[in-house]
Image (tube, rainbow over all chains, first blue to last red; front, side, top):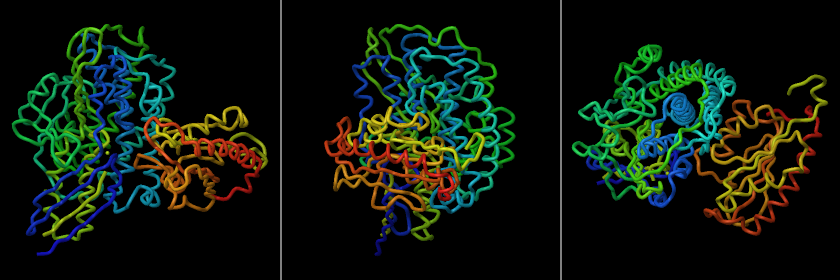
Length: 429
Length: 172
């Protein structure tokens, strides 16, 4: 019997801290665990006793990359509990700032974190020596997204302009005009980016995922919709806990989410795309087909194409929203607290981010529950790792290590959100 | 550079950036130094405090000829020790670890910007060794003292950088 170990002390190009442990016995992968050892951050616990108005600014601190996802889930839940509808131009502004987050988050991941895997570079710096124009494009896209978040949110990291009922300040049309110019250029860059990533060499691997995403009657989902899967789930977001549950596992400080009756499921770009391909504009559908994708993509490595397509979509959608924008009479709908439970669920760049809060009559938070996308994807990440590793066991340990890291990065995991990085061990016996 | 006339005769555009999280003990030194420089530098020298997204620094320093950065550093062997690192033709030393909880740190942002020819031609980094990076902690006394010294050094540094001829600048 021989034992072999491969160790990567620090998995780069993901947000957060964790480890991968691969057990190989008699030529078979017997265990593939994503160990997350980042200390739990107890957000749900320290939200108890805080006032509802504090909620959006506190949850924004959960993540520096996707703070809007947390703010939007929170304000939707507050408004749901207090029976307030936010519509018209305020709804437009919420969708617009979320487009900014999709653009900056996806551009960062596609160009700076994931693309080097496909081209054999250790990082984006080395890749920039041969693909400088693409890296400049990635930075320009990220900047365009950040500008949108800065204008509407006050700043791009942990924005401060979002409040229950709307915003503290709404922009004028003149405020948005220069952003529109930048977004038009960003759209061109994003289309080129789709074509660039579509030509990557992709491992031949598909998985029959249960995709779970929001679905809206008229729109590609961002802020609203029913929770729908490609199996039999089609529920109001308030019923999330009837179909899904979080389980504690010994090797992770982040909870694992599963469909109660079946197990692992997938959220994020591949799921959104598969559930909502018909909600994409014809221009984006055509670009997807030109890139070799049908209406459903089951190859997680090709998620990089779908992310790039979603950047194109977010640019188009932002431009459409800006063109039709008229400043609202009030920057926020007035609301008052009342006893109740509120639910919020939006499409973070990495997938659905679900919130539930109970409030008392003064609007004080009695309980809070937040289910971030990365914890929902953990079982699918582990299933992919086992399957991918099984298919390449005859390769060198270095090859297995690199491919496993790439597999994890398919998910753009934000381990910081789910509990933060990766040490890889392969044990062969 | 913008404007008319002989570019080599124009004052160079200098930017000062203080990096770090004001709520993480000695990691706050960049923000503290940036605050301490208010009113002490020429009006055409911006001083900004940044935390978190280091890639966005590439946007911040676009169009500047010279950059001065202040950041906290590990290891913690000698809290308050000041390292002045002149990056003309050099990289950040491997034994100095600038603190960042993100995948992209200052060193990576500078290296990427240089690769893409988007970096200021002259970059000076003041790295101050920290003693504690605990949540909510104040600066340790040694690092607080170093912050005052670094601010004085930057005032002098900016004066030198502005006066040097552009022709004296090394290629990036």
